[in-house]
Length: 245
Length: 77
Image (cartoon, rainbow over all chains, first blue to last red; front, side):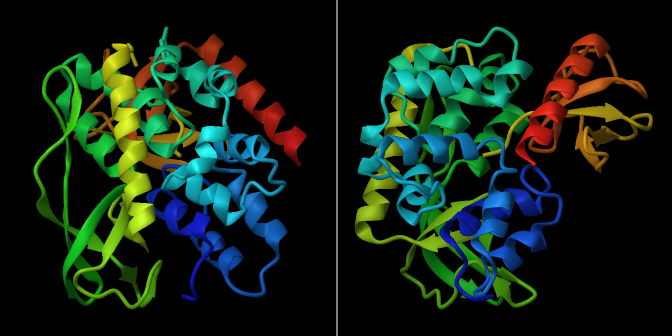
């Protein structure tokens, strides 16, 4: 696979699992390849009902015409200063109108916005998804696993064996009241299947991002700092708000 | 990224799993590990997220939501 569009690198893993996006994950890869029309990718990306409203909001807040502009896509998945341009009132409106809202019973996600939530993927996972509410109601599994796998996490490559990569990363935990990051441990992730991968030329020591069971991208120091900062901000928002998500 | 989606049960649950169909006609299996309430039955509408069925939605509410989703989808195309 040629280097994929940034959106595809992060959106492919849950799409391949059948959790969101268009029915055929290969369509994402095809649309991302060199020579494919931009319109194809936009059409597919709009089918990610969870992510697309955030991309539109981040783009509009920074006067960027294209929601798939790499600056916008990076802001949503990894985090960047573009998120500071998104008014809290706009994020509040998004959360209230999000497709998720109609399928949830009596949520108070607005509290998490007020407590400092931002238009970052981690905020959507922690505050908008139903899993933290289930976790707080005592249903530890699969809630903690879904929260962990669905957030974008970071780690350092320890070793590479064929299509598999061993990464040291800090997992998400729940202490009975708050979501926290635990001590680092080793986990296994995919870098490619059938010689197709989202990122090539990995070497031990690389710092990478992960989504579900895939390595998505190599993170530069600034990107790592942003991912850590915005993940911490989202954790603080849901922990401090006592939001009944 | 992902969203909760409405799915209709198309076959009786077995071994903690149920086969469901979404509003676009796509079949998939969903785990009942996180399901709240009595065992789902064929024809029930369920909220499914990340491969897990979470709860049942009554048929009237489901029809309303599916109708809205289809209208929104048609408006986009």
